[in-house]
Length: 123
Image (cartoon, rainbow, N blue to C red; front, side, top):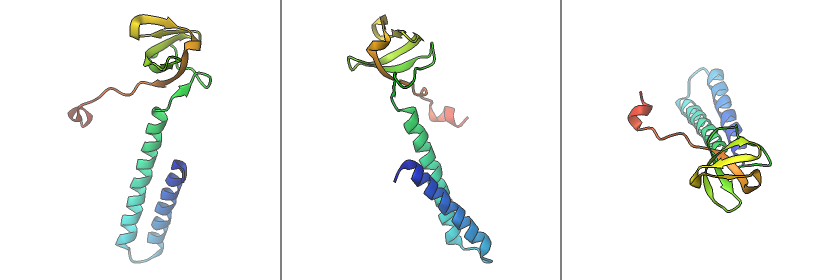
């Protein structure tokens, strides 16, 4: 089962349980709990899908990053470092401040969000 299929299945269970609850006169507590559990499952699966997309390497042949935005880059030397693209043929690799052409870069991905302390997240 793919992640998209799992999300769809969880959402279908929620819809069915909610329809069942409306149809029957007396409310079944188990149906309510099951619907809520599947709603939460669908939300977690969507979050997982989003996180997977954010941490996926993007081949240069597929798409280039925005100009002047720092990204993680993987070079032909299997080096992973931070760099940014000035133009489609001009990259600046931060480590060692050397420049590399587009032929030296295999793939890139956005940088992760900076760490926040738990106290900052709840404010």
